[in-house]
Length: 265
Image (cartoon, rainbow, N blue to C red):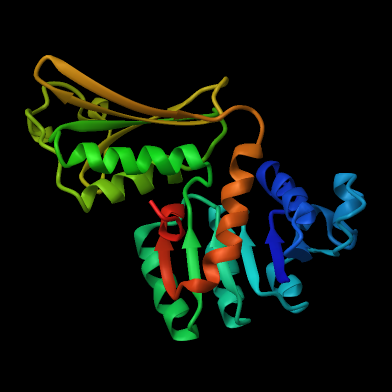
């Protein structure tokens, strides 16, 4: 039985994951973190009697209960501190929070390796996103020009999303994209060409009507390839991938980015 501590357990994605953990025969949710519901049981908050674990106001308090895996599903401003606290307590970590930088992950990797623990960071747990990433890596080997479009709801603070950032990082390991007109030679506002993230141009849209979508467009003379993921209004697509990450993060040491790190693809 894998003991799990879930930070962000009452949020949109965290609450659905909590229900998924409760339904799993090999996992148990031993503690939850939610500042607005501290002192209650998670089942009382979510209307799910099977979730009898206590809710704490901070990760430090919840980690004192003891767990095998700490799941970080909060916000970028507290995520790094929560991850560091979990590693100090000897837990492996699954990160679903987006907005952490490459520098943040470099520091986390050092701490994780020192502790002999694994950190699996996924910009998106949806299996369709994993496939988008793998297909895009294959395409980039053959097509030298592409750009990424990152869609999300209008109140999403971080831009680009963790999904788009992770995709750009992966493609950087394949090759640098060709840009026909150098960005410093653009005739007009430089910003219209998007932001350069790990060598790729990324355009972030923040509008009502979107949840999380990611698209990469490859172009060649007289032909174009688009690969796109769209999520619906439910958090259900992220549960299966997150459960898989929880089960397999203990096989890792240090920071590993992307759910495919524990998949046979």
